[in-house]
Length: 100
Image (cartoon, rainbow, N blue to C red; front, side, top):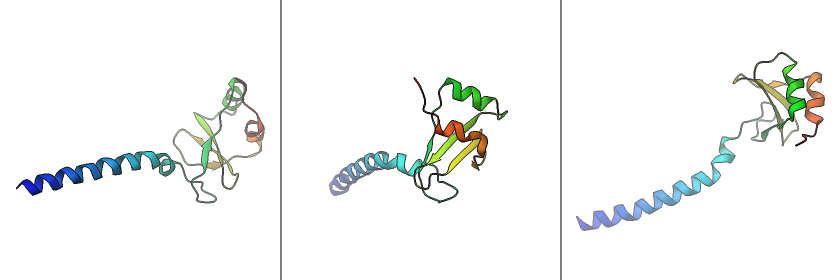
């Protein structure tokens, strides 16, 4: 019976180390996939107050803007809906540098 306890103690450490490694790589697995290139390169666009007001003037409910680092696609999403390609009205928001 003692050997089973020793084996369980060793496996316990493998589980702990495996969990730590998984947590370290979790953000790369949780990134959204770009619908155009199917790669995990989506990042949300940070807007300043003026940009947020301009975005609110479009009449969208809780919109979020995304850029794809891989294919440079420009996308937006309302609430938790599907990602849609951003049209010309969003161009100024994507090119705008946020001010602090």
